[in-house]
Amino acid sequence: MSNGISVVIRAKNEAKWLASCLDAVRLQDYEDVEVIVVDNQSTDATRQIAGDFGCTIVDISDEDFNFSRALNIGIAAGSKRLVAIVSGHCIPADDQWLTRLAMHFSNADVVAAYGRQQPLPDTSAVDKRDLWITFGLDRRVQQRDYFFHNANSMIRRSVWEQVPFNENIHGVEDQDWAKKVLNDGLKIVYEPTARVFHHHGIHHAQSEERANRVVRVIEMIQKDLT
Amino acid sequence: MKIWSSDPSAITPVTGPVDIGAYLSAGEAPQPGAAVCVGADFQEGSETDVAAWIVPAGLAADVDLLRRVLATGKDVMVALNGIGPKTYQALVAVDPNRPFINLFDARDQDAISYLEQLVWLAGRGGPFAVMARSPEKLVQAAALGAAHLIVPGAGALDITSIHRMAAAGASDAARPTSPAEVDHLVGGEASLTVTAPMAAGAILRAADLATAVTAERGLSPSLRDSIVGRRLRYAIEPGEPLNFGHLEPVEQS
Image 1 (cartoon, one colour):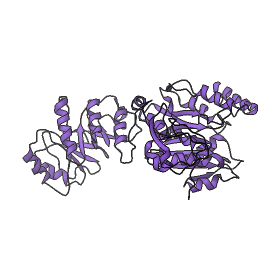
Image 2 (image 1 turned 135 degrees about the vertical axis):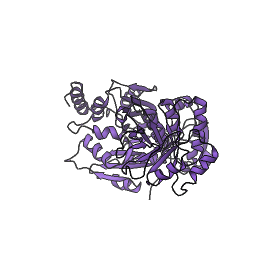
Image 3 (image 1 turned 90 degrees about the vertical axis):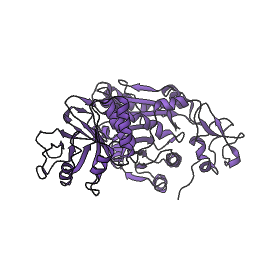
Image 4 (image 1 turned 60 degrees about the vertical axis):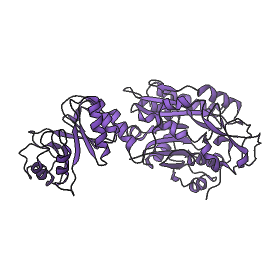
């Protein structure tokens, strides 16, 4: 298996941001990178942009879609030892994004890493506040805390082959997966220098509907009911 | 890289770039797929399914023995301990078309003697092998690119560090970066910035770009040529690190 990185991007109508994301991925200071875009029936130029950048495009229909399944089929379409996961509306901040996630995987105990998410200048105040509060400046090595975020993350393919993302839940698949793999002394690293810009933040402003869905899933994860 | 061990089941972790196989000392019944130590009475045809033969220290000067072992067509590792330059050349001349693998039995060697031998082995250019029990010696051999590590004796052995050496030495490996290395750079990295305030929508020209050490990292100065001609999505001030968020994407195809 190649020592490179499969970058997996979930997208639905991401034409506004996807080219910026792919442009930043293309200019990473890293060799042996493949990019897989999992498209959920976009009706804008998402597929055209992904094709223009030479990405592998994997389709998932609305009927089949959930966040976990989209990731699983995207990862399965790749072949590299490490898998970077980034949202189609996130933009890696600089050309060291992949390197600074990947550097932690020399340690065999590290199963995953995730990076800092920052707002853009025109991100809403609510989302700016939440991103700044959530993603700090210090590196953190987590052995019990299963906070993990797939808008900007990297996982070890061999671990995913043993524990794919849970397709029985709708969202928060990152934390559900993290809780399952954090055992036997294994670790997840938060790496603040692996940065992306996330325009609309992690809480989608004040969407009560989304908050209710997230809370329901997290309560299930807390009780090991997933 | 492959590790040949008397106790393969005691090696952890089993997943990684290093393969693990069985090592059998002289006198043990050969097994298919194992690396097997030959005795002085070795006869060709005695075992055909082994993966490799090992001529142990003390027997390597027997040119006839080496000829018989090489004739099996298997990989052959020859322990060169105690062999002088003339004998070594005589061994090389046995079959120039079927080179054997230089092996050093590093058990009971002091650190400097071992490193001296290791550097010589690595400097030959071909594959080489080391026999040792010490994890430190095994890691050092792996770091210098040993193709085979032979671990005689029973007991647990953690080869995490050897996996790392093997991964770093793979032909397609990215240059290893360590968190400590990155921490040392925080606040001291040069990034692209601009020479004067620029508004959103402006096009970046070469003259607009400068390099500065910024509090937080921006785009590497090596990307300068890729950035010229790009349109700014957001305004930027001099000294502020230019990053991908500032840029409208370039159109492809």
